[in-house]
Length: 283
Image (cartoon, rainbow, N blue to C red; front, side, top):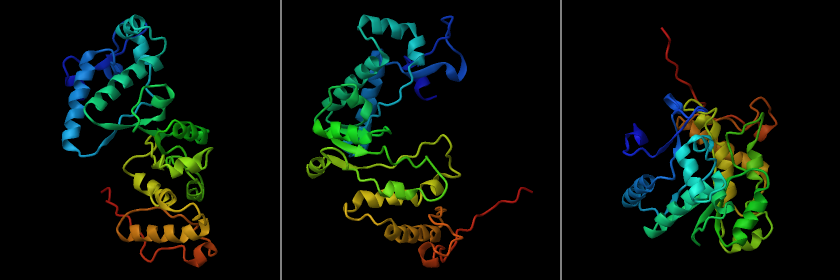
């Protein structure tokens, strides 16, 4: 039952064009951020998380909140008018600010998607900004670090975006500090790391392992290697060897080379042990 089991419910009720609540799976939308009950629940949730996990940081999200349900809800609309909120970005920022203030009070630091920074929320000095949007990620990294915040870069590393042939070199060739002021930001420790992302619109348990590995290893090596380690051909041997080790352990990591080309990897573009799938007969 999840959120629906709470009393009062904290998910936004969605309405149709006639002002009637929608039925079924469309009945609710995002959190109803106008209710005090929502923040009571979140306070209890994060207090419990802090008691279970020793980590100093939690990732509180803050991206891609759909606004259609909020727009349909008369209670949300009345709240926005009463608080002079002119956009749903303002409503989301108000929610995020209350949540961030709550976390600060309990001594928890936070990682946020870049929208919270972009929308002008009052964030703590130790906030980590997760830069995920495509396009000009260099400009965003420059803005974030110039403001003195730590960053994690994920924008160039979306493994769910696939193409024919080798695509891991494009991840390997990204230099996270390659932006205006990046050298100084890197020296100051504000370029905190990289993050591989895998969105699941076309990924499930049947293909997520093979789609991630060994492509994610190219991002990992980029993250921990010196800027001078740039040779894709050299990296290809290491990543291929890593792939073979995964295959030997029964992990169905996909090839990174053209198995039909003798020119690849000095004609050693195969693994000593091949992955053997296991099928169940249908009858």
